[in-house]
Length: 395
Image (cartoon, rainbow, N blue to C red; front, side, top):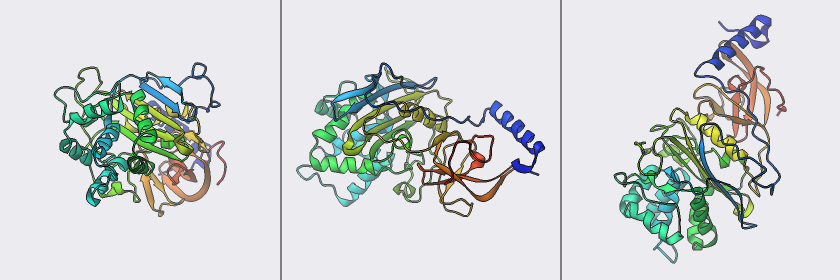
């Protein structure tokens, strides 16, 4: 038995009651939340406030390569466990003594690309073993003049994701890649980061932070740790669909780097000519779901002054439900492009009517276009009391 929202006062009351019950529970649908407006580029950071959601520890650095200045710095030298961002150092070390052409065999190039584009953990682990483990980090610290980077703590030397990195050192890594590295190295690594796939090989959605907040061109290396072995992201157009990988586990804290809280990091470049280098590291409570962490990081990144960036058109809304499918069209027979992280905020550009969908007690024939996912979801799963979303234009 279900009730249409358009069916009358009883249905409306029912829906409001059910919404209230959901919002009061642990699986609450997050309220509609528009992203913070972007301030004019050049506004002093002291006047603007970086939005750090409650419970989140963040390290931030944004460097404008055109002016040679930082537009944002928040705890830039705080050390975080790197998760997969250390793959930048693993990749650079692997190429270091292969000049002057820096060529790889076809098989090695395929796994190298998979490590950077789809954040493949198996390849990173292979390179870590083959090239000396923690010695990789020690070499790269010396070569690049890194100040806050350190190998994994004692007793964890085999876990490359426990390498310590800071936002400031991450900017230095990208500046080396863009300004100093041999052209073949720059082309190979930055080319892979520009082709970052939606899904990692472990099934986690990689389009958080930078790629969710800015239009292309961008290049990214993301990091996540502590959310479990595998995610639910699917991407039929991604190399990630061809493999599965391990995610390093989370152990008790050691030394000065937190190994316990959930880590979600976004790093890379934004804008024409890689104008801005962006490094954002976050640690979030162990109870934080991947979708909630994804949302927290997105709100933080959207608050930053990133010269050369272009913000996508649309309004941010919360979603509810698990395994919500993003489809190629506005009907349930359309191809499934991917699945949303549970409870994540999404950018909605426009909406249109399509197939009527029933999720008892709801019925809705409106569909929302998600430009960052390249498809549509039924409005049933958007956190709004109306079938037609307020303030969202028609497609």
